[in-house]
Length: 81
Length: 248
Image (tube, rainbow over all chains, first blue to last red; front, top):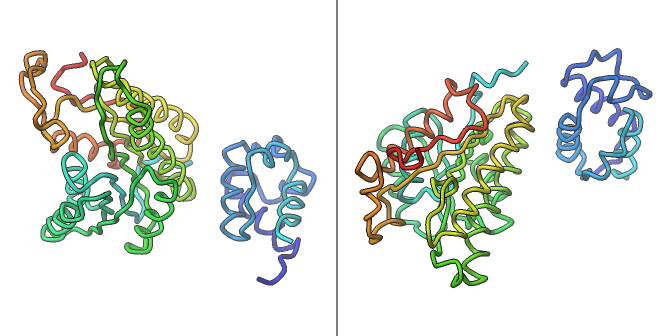
């Protein structure tokens, strides 16, 4: 599999989060999930998308630590390497 | 917002569907228009007969062997059903069940573990797998076949009762976690139903059933049919008893 770029992950994460409700313009790296009204079930669903697309398995402990969009993107990229 | 009212293109998986209540459920869901994956553990002839009957009636079905107590079963079953029908599984009926009755003091470690493994843990794993496509689809129907003995005591069935009561608790928890994704999870609690599982057992119980008769698998299937339907989109976390009034 070719290397996954941060840009690819970022775009997929933003697209997925936007499907949960928030406007794309609000979804910045610094935005917190709380601000975006993204709840724990949304993050479970994001983890499923990430697993399907990149084969990266995010566990419950991983998800609990995530506060911002940027942290999620960085975690996924680091696991995909 | 998802309103859980309109079913997307999808199929149904019924576990333990080669005979009895499961077979009736598979045939009824097929009549309702669901392509149905008919799971069985050992009775391949029974499963083949269910598939044949569905196909003769103009429905679509496939038989899939797996022991739901096997941790690998959910992935096998979902992958096989989805690749056969080309649509996601958006209705799951956890029906597969075994019994190993004995007075509590005489229940062996195996009697306890095996019944819990099939009747409760199997349903847990299948439901966990089912939620993936259901969450993505914003639609899902989970129906867990519990039992009236999950609601009130029956001597000799501590293991079976514990598993069936556990199914009800699991159903309710799933509901509160995922209802906002358009997914419903409900339990059906049959009472005394004429099947292979109850054959040979003395139905002295009949005198205690307000309806004064045993129920039929079709009468249980009718409830599952409703709970899986678009019309039942607002029925969530319920326990529907089908017992001739036994638990009333």
